[in-house]
Length: 100
Image (tube, rainbow, N blue to C red; front, side, top):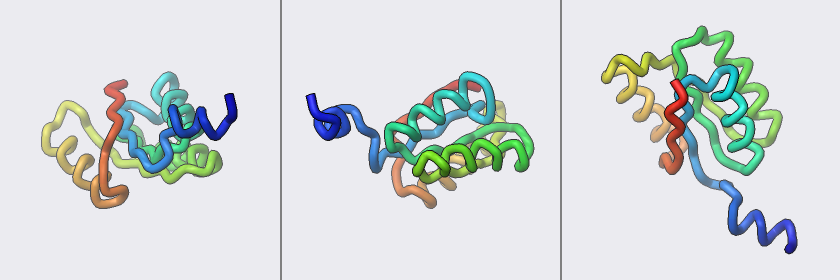
């Protein structure tokens, strides 16, 4: 099988993922994996802006677009604001990873 076939079948180019709790550990690993497959990645986490910026930098180094949004997943309004921000930035959301 050619690499381009695999990219067409399983690549995530043009898709957008939101990952809650994505600034470290399993969430960060998932974010890196989705980015490596070509997805835009939005990290929704309660961590500091500085911590969020670090994972965004890693994702961008993989060639994907990334965004950090400080989000408290226990607060409905915070989650709604995060979703709106991702839609403004990327236009769509195809993948949700509830890691928080």
